[in-house]
Image (cartoon, rainbow, N blue to C red; front, side, top):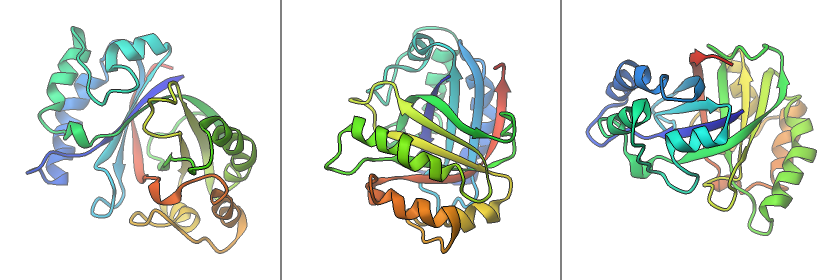
Length: 238
């Protein structure tokens, strides 16, 4: 599955609550009907005051061309669809989003672990937007991440689902990948991966400690945005 992840930032003059109200009640009914969308989920921050973004919008497509037609190509934060719900959704984002401050990512999802049979509605999710270290190529980063780090990360205590997302166009992508770890309990997430306001964390034991030590082998931790939120599945035709 191909997915488009938008890291949402509200417009100046809006409170977070005003942003969420508009996004959920006005924009979401449009976005979930965008042509080609097979699954659509929104993620609201568990701690809005300390979150780096106001939310995540994640749209899935079976075909990459359908995604590009609806939401633009990899290298552009903006896009200009000419018809249908995609055009309506693009026009509507100007009512609540700060487009220039909204990173976006297009990639292919690889499910590494799934104990919930794909049912992520209501689960807590830690999304790490990964940036490689300066001395690594993207390919070297991916090889280490997938073959060395992923076997550790999917065994972190409390993780019920783990997915990695690889960019479809690495040269133009804003990040080298996304790591998505799902938990049924927020306290277990915080114990394993730290609280909302810190990009770094210091678990004391188990696979969480092992994973934290390993990220220093391939990630530029200070350049890696992270987001902790609760997911709502708005549409699922997969």
